Length: 330
Ligand SMILES: NC(=O)c1ccc[n+]([C@@H]2O[C@H](COP(=O)([O-])OP(=O)(O)OC[C@H]3O[C@@H](n4cnc5c(N)ncnc54)[C@H](OP(=O)(O)O)[C@@H]3O)[C@@H](O)[C@H]2O)c1
Image (cartoon, rainbow, N blue to C red; front, side):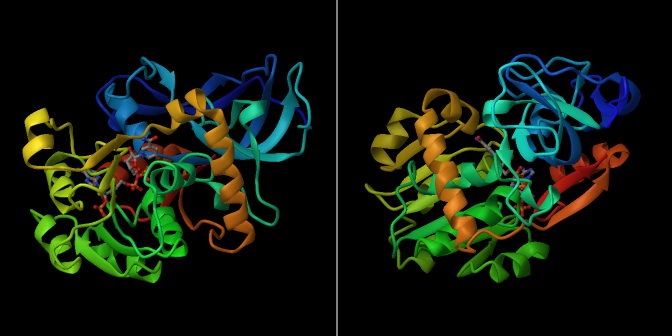
């Protein structure tokens, strides 16, 4: 297969958000260096982090102009030096820079094969959203059968995987989502679903748990909901795993931890987890593979957008108007 010299890609031109993301047609196709592979992107995954990067609020994120996107699945078309086990033709998914493009480089060591029988698009989420949801539930959240888990943004790319896995591990799931997404969340197996646009969710969670509160909260909502999540967690033993700030930053004081919220607050950043404790990430990927084999995690349903329509996809994600994982198809 011949590889062109230039390609179409989405370039972020400012830190004013996805509105300043433009389609360019003359981006150079990169060459794989040592330990890298070049893939022809079949489907790029849209993540909330793409929005944070476009506003410059993602710590250590790229400075404009940059090629946007970081998650993609596709076919290996060229291999750099010192790459073992990946050949042209292999279908993989991974993370790198510039995924919203026709071609991108992936570090070979972190490229994961697309599950047999799945399309590239169906595998989106496998290396970002699903390990994040699993890390929040298991190694960090300590989920156990019979416990109650509160999952925010349950209809989203990360939340849907969290609901499915929490049910598989025997938990009662209280989900939150915007009103138009409740059917989706219930169909995933959630036991209860609350309106995420309602002011204070804590009283309803306390009512559903007989006043005890949730054993585990998957907190990605931020803003005013963060306080509700702390109030909704069980005193003394409740865990709140914080992995998103969609609704904005909020502060908590030591006074509040002593007198108001006697709960465990645990921060999660999957990129840091991969770097700092790679063996835990390996265990997460092993467990995800087992969950796929067991049919717990099935090929993902994505909403597809043409590459040129990427800014619109990001704007819809930001406006809470989307359900499930979004795919950009170059
Ligand atoms: N820390 C990590 O390593 C890591 C990794 C992956 C994802 N995440 C985080 O996990 C969360 C979900 O990510 P995702 O990519 O799967 O996105 P997503 O869940 O598909 O979409 C985001 C959803 O968050 C909910 N939301 C709540 N408050 C919001 C607000 N003020 N503005 C916009 N949305 C709000 C909305 O659902 P409703 O309208 O239905 O409530 C929205 O649809 C994000 O916060 C993301 O940053 C973190």
